[in-house]
Image 1 (cartoon, rainbow, N blue to C red):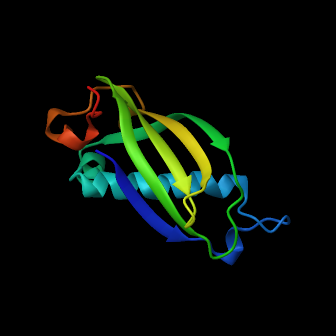
Image 2 (cartoon, rainbow, N blue to C red):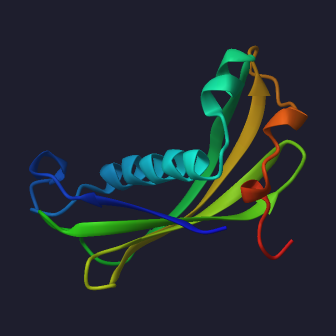
Image 3 (cartoon, rainbow, N blue to C red):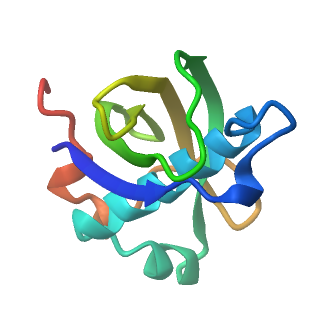
Length: 134
C-alpha cells in the first residue's frame, strides 16, 4: 500500500541558501511514516506501551531538487521489504509541480525495551506493512 502525506514548507526549515535544509528532509520522512502507520491501522502507541519500538537503522537518501518556502510537498511512503525483525520503506518527496525533491530507502528494526532486536509481536502485523510485490 502506498500512502501520501502532505505538508507546506515553513520559513524556519530553510537554510542560508534559502531552501529546505537537508536535515529537515529526515523530519519530513518521519512525519510521513507516522502518517502511513496511522493510515494502515498500525497502533504505534500500543506497540510502545507493550515495550517495543521501531528504530530507524539506515537511511539512504538522494536529494534531487531544492524545496523552497511555501512549496506544497507530497511525501509518498511504500513498504518494499518486510522481514521477521525489520523492514524497509521507500519514500519520495515531490513538490506541487510533481518534481521529485528527494527519495529515500528507510530501513527499520523492531527492538524490545532493552534495545535487543526482536520480532514484531503478532498483534501488530497489519496487512499494510506487507509490500505489494510480496
